[in-house]
Length: 297
Image 1 (tube, one colour):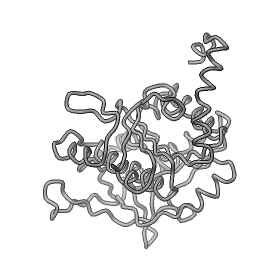
Image 2: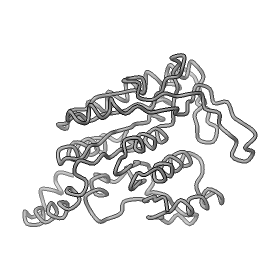
Image 3: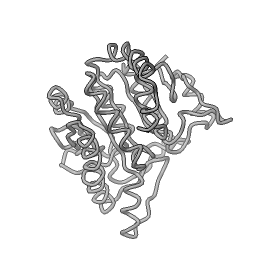
């Protein structure tokens, strides 16, 4: 990536920076919640690009908040222990033994890797789980069956959010830190819950009144049945894509989280291709669309 940049003539570099100026001005002081996942989280070059993007956004006056998942890392840890992951409607079934693994992978290994990457790129990242500052209160998720709403699936220690208290995130933001949030909540009896990271990102964006919610994925965005990218979708259009099965599997919670955020006042929700180097900067600081934008209407 650096070699390409060095080959750009100085005048062109200046032009590129000048084109970013209106966006920097527009989003200065605004909160941007980023759901970090997919290849961007496992490919070393893309990891470095991501960390640089986050630090740059902070340095030009935006307030990035990172929420991460860790599906592949959890799967790898469970495999080492001889446990097989089981999913219902895109949600991981989490018994108490699995929950222990989920906690040490998400709040330990994965979170600290991300914090380290951002710090290495010149930022000041701080790791949080839902317990820190009472950030995410949760309860056991009762998941209705997609085809029969009267039927509910028991997915173990998987939680749904009861409330988010963003004061710890706001305190860190005001102090030039970059919060990195693991999607773990706590219940009324101090029990732990694994919460879908897309859902946490969506709810956190809503509570923080974020300007943007950005979800990095391993796809170009939302695709129609023919595989074409849908760059702009309304709530009604998404309902139709749910109904005819175009959106299914792991994309379901992602889109539901995005849609909830759009309906709840987050100005723009973007599902972007995390396999594109610096996809986040390109989406925020240029006119070019690098995925699907979701709006409430």
